Length: 311
Image (cartoon, rainbow, N blue to C red; front, side):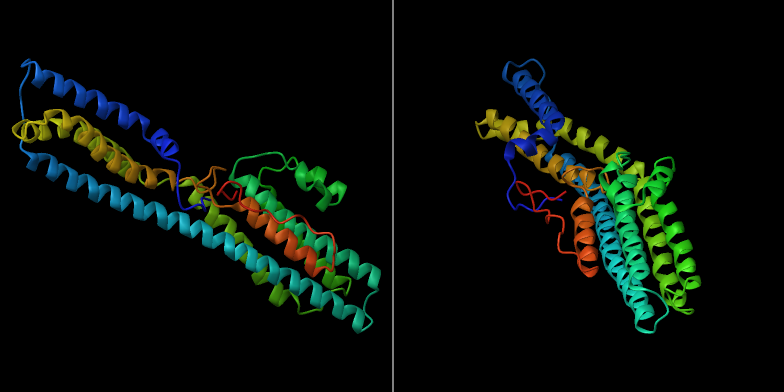
């Protein structure tokens, strides 16, 4: 996620370099043709104005849709953080109550709380890797029992398997009287919420913005880029500064291309890019908060932005 307010102009140009090269070549060619009386044709600026208006509508719609999907993804992960805290509180408070009423021993309760909370932390990490299509799960090997971790490595959808195991262990906790007989009534909706959050993230990941809007936005942009120099050359020639048509065409194309690129890159919510949802930092928050709720003193270092980017 981008946090810095000012961007490197060279980096911005790299995002739209194809459009800029196209605009430069066409502008130079049109200028040369008119300068040496090889092919003199001018178009009314009204044509480019109308086309630019249509292009602006497509770009605005695409940008709004892309941002809405990006914000939904961010909201889903904020809900995962909040519900992870709720789940940890439910497990810890209910399990500690078993000690208070003499239903279980401190050793069994402590092991159960650590297992459940660590598995919840692992769920967040595996969901992050699952959405980014990454497979290196060794980074959270220390959070699971060795046997469970070995089985998890062969699963197609690890976060879903972890939620299943959480549900099974809740039932077993009730059977062992670590949890109360009715604790599942409050815990199960929290677990169901994680399933819903994961499903919504997968929907966003696997369903791109309508390709028609992407295609026609690119087509209109290139048509606009080609026609703009022909619309500008006549007016600038009358003013006696026909050479200014080249930089003006490039600048106008740069503006439209840059705004269009904003909507394109905002479609990348879970791709581990600088425009990505900062899932690594969010998982770090979950791990720090839940381990602190367990009373642990050694917490992971809080992830901070690097050069204005948070991953």
